[in-house]
Length: 450
Image (tube, rainbow, N blue to C red; front, side, top):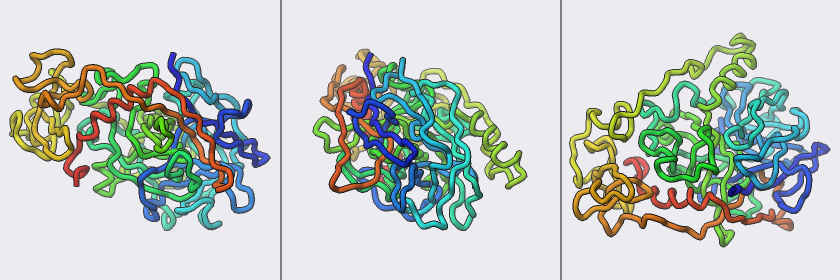
């Protein structure tokens, strides 16, 4: 069984942090990944909060990220608050004991951690799922001891109203924006500053009509149906940060698709690669029930607008594949361009598939079956990663291999230039996941290409 490497860090809340290291035999917190690599400093989106564990003086001993979804409620990663093993095997890896008391954690809306005193909020309660397996259950809810004023931060929207596979509301090909407080490279010491990176690729979503992980060949033992796979950009310290659906983000509507759980490091150790997120919609009941309790059944403040406590089931995938709903799928309206016509949006094509092998020249194509030469027109071949017809010279080989290895840390320790964070690279099944990412990077909406 292949195993996903998680960075190990611990919070022994006498306020001692064990660095992200694989050689510490006990109290390994962990998992996963990352900070915003290749991003820019963000002083605007204050609903993206820093999660600080073990504050000593003005120094956080542990750094994670989170999203404010109600004035006193934050979603983050579970491995930021509970112990787990360093190596993650989806079949066996479990969460363990709680790392410290809730009051050992503070949340800040400041763009730097730990932030000015006026923007620090102490955690009074931590809620986590009942299942103890790491994969798919890596989410935590932090209830604050006070209400964050709207002048400081306006809460964002958790994706609890719709399934992530609902193409009437979410464009799975649009990608997402990542915002977090992590480092900017695997060996960096610059955690604690909020950074943003837009247009990160959504590699695949289990059950999605357009980019179903199983149909794209993602290794089933590396993720669960409560997760989705994303592209590069996050690093250590970004754990718990949200993936913000790109189309809505560009419209000024901030919807969290998932909470960052884990990721990897390239073989040369120079870059953080890949990302796996715990889906917010998979934990809608826990989030909605906790929200009602945290607001004293909505007496502390009004129910959110729009009301994400109400759920609408997704439409079924149309016959013949492709996205369901108004913007995709066989028989949906809007697309007028045929195979080979130039395009800039999926919705312009009858097939709802606008694609480019080089990221520059986009044309309408169609879905296909890997290995079936008859599923594409003459001169075209089925790309096994994208499952779309491309010019034969552009379609990838049936079995694409990469030399990328992965590793990751979930939380960032306090920056210390004299003590770089030790990362341990491990080969794992996520190589196949990264192969999917490399073949999907050209799939963009017009806004992503701009």
